[in-house]
Structures are given as C-alpha cells and as structure tokens.
Image 1 (cartoon, each protein chain N blue to C red):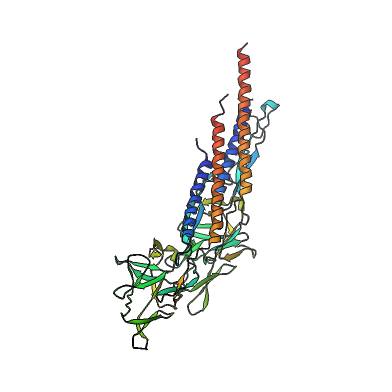
Image 2: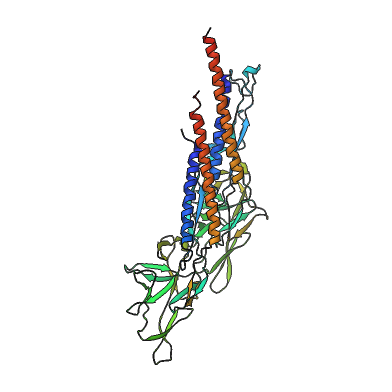
Length: 267
Length: 255
C-alpha cells in the first residue's frame, strides 16, 4: 500500500533541503572575491495519466477533461549567476578586477587551464605572476614575468603590463594579460578555490584582448566582490524552509490517512 | 446497505486522490512556471446496481446507487507571481501563452523561463537544453561575440555587438492553447496542447524575471485538511456500516 501523496511530499522535502544547501553555500561565500552565486531550478516530475481527455465517462459521453496526477518535484539544475559583482579598491598593484564577461586563464601545476575572475595575483620568487588563492601556485597561463628590479607596475585597461625600473623613468612593456570568455559560462565546472574549468557545455574558450568583444576591461588595484545579495538569499531561505514545512505537513496528512486505514477493523 | 459500503469507499478513494494532487502542488511550490492542478469530483447519476444499467434509476429507493468519484483534473493556468532575478536569459510571460520549445520528438509548451545558450550559441532551456523556437519555427542563435542580449516585450531577441550595433536575431514563438482543458502535463515543466494559436497583445515577455510557482499554500493547506477529514468521515461511515451489518447478522444468527 502506498500513497502518491507520501512520495510526492518526500520528493518535495528532498528538493527543498537541497535548495537550502545551495543557499548556505551562497551565504558562506558572501565575501569571497568574485564568487558567483548559484540558483536551484525545480521542475515537476512525471505525470500519471489516469484517463486522457475525451475518454468516455460513466454515461458513455466524452469527458471534456482528463485525469492526471503529478508525482512530485525534483531539482532540475543549479544555475550559476554570472552577473558582475561590485568592485572594491585595494592597495595592491597586482589586484585585478574585470568589468565585463571575461575570465583570467591560469595554469594548474598539472598543466590544466583553469579560469577565474578573482584577480588576486602575486609575484613568486622567480618573478612569475601567480594566482594567490591557494598554497599551490597557479601561473597566469600566458606567462608574465616581472623584472627583479621593477619599482612600479601599471596594468592598463586593455591588459598591457608595464614597469618602471630603478634609474629609468621610462615605462617599459613586459607583457600582456589576455582574457577568455565562454558563450555559456553557466556550463563551466566549478572546481572550488574560485576556479572554473571548461566543459562541453560551456563552449570553447575564446581568448582576446581586454576591452574587445565584450571581454571587459581590467581595473588595476581593484577586486570584484561576490555577487551574493544577502537579503535575496534570506528571502529564498525563508521560502525554501516554508516549502519544506508544507511538505512535512503533507507527509503527516498522508500518514494519518494510512493510520486510519490500518485501524479500520479495530473495534 | 452494502452499496453504502462501496460509496463510502469511493468517497475515501476520491479524497485520497485529492491529497495526491495537493501533495504534487505543494512539492512544486518552488518550481518556476508551475501551474497547480485541481481534482474535480462529481456525483454519479443514480442507477440500478442490481441490473447494471447505467442511467436507469432503480424503481425504489433500495435500488438507487450513484456514489461519487474523480471525473477529472483541471489545471489552474492563472498568472504566477513574477520574481526579479536580473538574469539575461531569465524570461517571464505575463498574460496567457507559453514559450515553444522542442527536441527531436516534437514541440512542447513551457512557462519555466530559465534559458541559457548552448555551446553553439543556440537559445535553449537551461535544465534540459530544449531548443527555443522562433516564430518562423527556427532555433534562435546568438553570435559568439555578442556583448549584450536583450529580449523585448514581444519576444524579439536583440543582440548588441562589440561595435555597439544592435540586430534582431529572431523573435521567440509564443503559443496559446485553443482548449486549455485538454492541455496535458508532461512533467519537467512541459505541457502539450492539441492545437495552439499566437497570443494577443496582452501577452508580454519580461526579461530578468521568472514566473514563480502557481501553488497557493493557503488554498492547498485548506484542501489538504478537507481531504483528510473527508477521508476520515468516509472511513467512519465504512465502520458504522460494517458494525450495523454485523449486528444484523448477529441478531439473525441468534434466532
């Protein structure tokens, strides 16, 4: 014996607790540099079609409506929201923010290209520019070396890196920073540590000069904030919690029905 | 008296079905563009159960039996609340109508307006990658180097290139079913209609919004209570009739 209601409510409880997990992660990353929030999309499950519309009714006449009942809900997907976060000024010369759709391309020690918008770069002992998000150094993929005697470092909006060395007032170009964009950034795989990886769904990486083709320009001395809006997340949290509660009510009602049936012959 | 038992069982069964429908509505309280369903009950006309002739009432009260049952489920297609998301490909419809999406097997209708681009730049549903159709029945393609994409109220998709020139790449098809009663739920936020027409001027698309679920928690909770109480009442009726039947048999056996 089973009630559809009990199972449907179970799927609801599952889905809303998953949503809570997603919201919790968003809120936990409310101050992570360049964090992109996620949203849970729900969809209804399969419908049991008990009688198609137009089937003959009790008197043999075609019924204008059919009988169908849905079997609950499920999480259809989690969608990344890649809207721009606000920029925060820092004092670091190698802090870079992107205004636009692009990503920085960095190279994992294993040689895999990874993408990030968290432009917290530093220079390692060799003078190479690395992403300073973890204890593992991730080189900027196109390679950028800063001379040991560099005093001043400027990065223009279109990615030209220039330094001034001691005893030389002239700026000299030492390299470029290029940006990458994806036609479907939602299809990128999140690998943690602010990094994304290309997948079949994201489309191929398109490399270009900052400021062109919607890649966005670079802002030196700025970092992009997380695009989590705490108020919105809290509203979603409340909604999710209440939806969960409503589904527990259905479980109780269904349980009560089953109990009544079980007790029918007890007198 | 035995007919009463059947009728009470029918009543309980119908209420159980009503609870199933309510459960599905509440489970989908967070599904974008979801439309709630409603179980419709009707009494069956009296007929003569001894002779099994539908539509022919018995000749005395003892032979009357009708009962009730679920005759259908209606879907409440009324407008759901709009939620602002700011997403470029989050689209909500105000007014009657659906987006037309398709896979290899055919066309479907949906109001769950969370779309995305696939790797080839085609506009598809975010969750299952179903192609969004244009009024010409073609897919809608966005250029890889488009800087911005906007969707106007009539569904025209306009992309802006990096040189700041705008061009219309297609107009999203919208469809209104000719008969809402026969629209079938397929699940996964999809519907299928037998025939559709283009919508009137009242139907508009809003970019950066999603239509929330049409589930109304208050209505559903009331229905849930109603269904459980009516189920209980029917089970009590079964018990009373069983007791009465038992007493009758006892008194007959005592003679």
